[in-house]
Structures are given as C-alpha cells and as structure tokens.
Length: 296
Image (cartoon, rainbow, N blue to C red):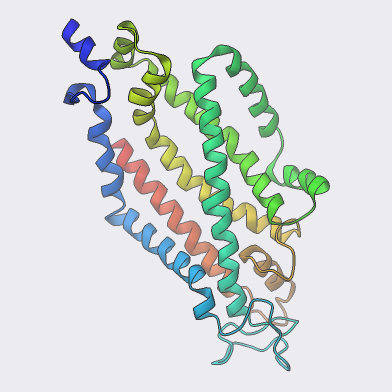
C-alpha cells in the first residue's frame, strides 16, 4: 500500500504506472474519434469553411467593399456567382471575406472565454472563499439573456466586432467556469488524488499532475459546442445591427441584408446561410464525436 502511495505522488520524471495514470489511456480516444464517422465529417466541414475564409484574397474576384458599376441586385451568373447586393457589391466575394469575421470570433473569442473560465473554475474548486465569489459572479452573468447582455454592452462600447467579443467571452466564462468546477471536484474524490494528498503532494502539483489531465475531456466537448453557439451569437448580433459595422462583411450581416432584400433578390442569403449551416454542423458533429468517445 505504501509503495502505491509513493508512486502516485512521485515527481513528473518518474515512470508512470498504468493503474495510476488513467488519463494516458483516454487521450487517444478523442484523437481517434476525429478520424472516423461523425468526427471526420465534422472536421472536413470545418476545414472547407476555414479554407474558403483563409483563401478569400485568392478566390474572391472582387474586394469585400468594391462597388461594381451597373450591377445593382444582379442575379447569380458566371461573373457574379451569388449575385450582387443593393450597392453593387459582389455577394460571393463578401461572403468569403465574411467567413473571416466568424472564424476570428469562433477561434479567438471562445478560447479566450474558455481559458478565463477554466482558470476561475480551477481556483474556485480548490478554495472555498473564491468559490463563493465566483459563483455569485456567474449567477449575475447568467441572469441576463445573451441578447439583453449584448444590447447592454452595445450601449456602453457601441456596436462592432469588439462588442461581439465581449459578449461571447462573458457568455462562455460562467459555462466553462462551472463545468471546470464540477469536473475538478469530481476528480478530486478519486483515490489516486486522495493518495497524493495523503503523502504530502501540494495543491498545484495535484492539479497539474492528476486533476487537469483527467478533467479536460468534458471541457473539450464544451469547447466545440460553444464554438457553434458563438456563430449564432455573432449572426444574431449582426442581424440586429449590434455586430460588425458596415461596410465590413460577416455572415450574420450578410444574412440580414439578404432578408431585407428577400423579395428583390431571394438568392442573396443562400451562400452565407449555407456556410453558417456548414460551420455549425461541423462543430456539432465534432462535439458529438468527442462526447461519444468520452462515454465509451
């Protein structure tokens, strides 16, 4: 028994024992889940959308704000694959550049909110005083619906991409904070963590060596889900005029323009809407694949 306890709290350089390191057996599951079935389909969908956004300068025949003389609400054609808008701009080009805005929101704002939430959740799960404060702050943020919070922030900082960032970070912070708190408290009750505590391992050593490696899987699933939610948040804010300011494009603002011109140009919103569906579907497929791998 004493030998087992000493091995659990051994320095990082010591050779891990299979029965003391369950995280080492689980890590390949998430990677393999993304190489087949739903996971692979999701990765491919996300990869296509990301590639279109990154290659926008090469694929777009016009600039995102370039006006084309005599091309007002022109229908889809060989020159304009998705037609033009009411101010003579190529919708296909604006859609490709609009992807970039959503990618920035998805792959920057969500991870920032996740990192802050995880750090707060770690601290609050280990020390009671900070837990009380953190949970009351989370309650306060969650008391506001997302759009109400967006309107309130817009009143202070004005509409724009910065406001979208703040809203997404504020929304995701309590989500990841509470999920981290729950996961860490569950792992803390495991025998190998209690054994490390008995032989004198410090709190940060326990967090780094045992708790974090065995708490990351639900956080990874939530990250994929939150990224899909962020696409909807950006779209809703831009649709209401709280997001990206004209003339800069985003998928949400392009859908808003398409709805406004629905009767004159019903084709307008097809491209942006299809990309939003592809991006959200890809993220949801990835999250489902990760969740199934975790359960198995």
